[in-house]
Amino acid sequence: METQPTPENEENPRKNRARDRHQRRKERTQGMVYPTNVPRSQPRQIRPTGSFQIPKIQFPTGSNRVILYGIAGVAFIVLVIFALGRLKNNNNATDLEPNAIWLGTQWTYDNPDDAALAALVQRFRDNHIGTAYAFVSLLQPDGSWTDTNKLDSVKAFADRFKKLLPKVQLYGWLSIGSQGVDGNNRLGDTNIQQNISDFSQRMIGDFDFNGVFLNVVPVINGDESYLSLLRKVRATIGENAEMAVAVPPDWTPTDAGITVPKQIEPGTIWDESYKQRVALLADQIFVAAYNAGFDNPDDYSAWIAYQVKTYAQSIADLATTTELIIGVPTYDAAPPDHDPAIENVQSAIKGVITGLSEAGTAAQFVRGIGIYAEWETSADEWNEIKTLWIDR
Image (cartoon, rainbow, N blue to C red; front, top):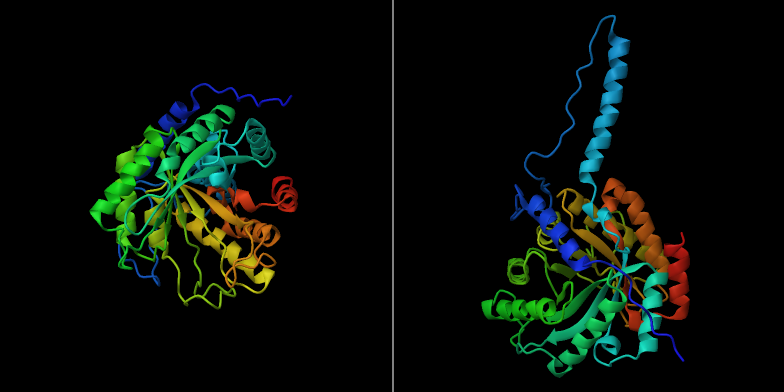
């Protein structure tokens, strides 16, 4: 007889986290300046009004110089520690595990049995996974959602999952193509925005997900309609629900001192100001750092390190509580853009670790890695994740 997993004990976790999140978001948006049309060559740093600055120290002359130098030195160290504390991400107050994973229709549509769910729960615990993006539906070019006849199964899975792993943040994953039937960007259409926002609200109200995960592709640098969509979704789901977004990497960054993908148009990056504007709207950002078409794993690792550094430092400039998840690919070959011999757990994690080192204090905004995707992660890849990332 198989043993059914038992839920973890936690007293009303969603309500408590929602209250904390609401207060953090309220604090972070007071005095924020939203950048617009900032040239790439002159990036603009945004900080909340009244942010702490280390004062200038005037060194004296005379017989008391040595004593005053010592006092000034101690005071300076104290001020530096205080300043770094101000930059620290408030998410450390929670007990959520750091890593994330994408879950497919095997879980949300196919009504998995208790044994399968028990194995999934153990996988989450073994690999410190605290965030799951569970697939719900795809918005088609004609504005309809796929597989709406499967929504009862999605709700049943969400209910079972939350009972077994109440401490894991479960997001309803919605895939959205930004192009309509005419091939043009449809994100600025108010009807489309309302459609996505209403469906997002269902994820929270009807399915009891902790939040909604918007995987919108493609999104080009400076797209105001994408920001408008995020504002609409945020206003609709409310402050007590999470909103996570998947974003593209900087495909071909200029002047970064790294090899860039050969098959992608040069200069295909997001400006720092655009990254920041997205970060001010989202609670969590998943950087989809794969599918780049490299032919050398070391080049891919260096490119990943750049993604970690540039996104982390952009968010750190905001002093926000938005957190980053860095994508790690485990999916099968998809030529010409993805070769598992190049883009894999080993080369991706190597890049993440290097990027965290290069990011300095901004590294604290990187919550963990995000595994794409659960349905294609092999036993060997799970072992590599455990060895290279979990137990490092």
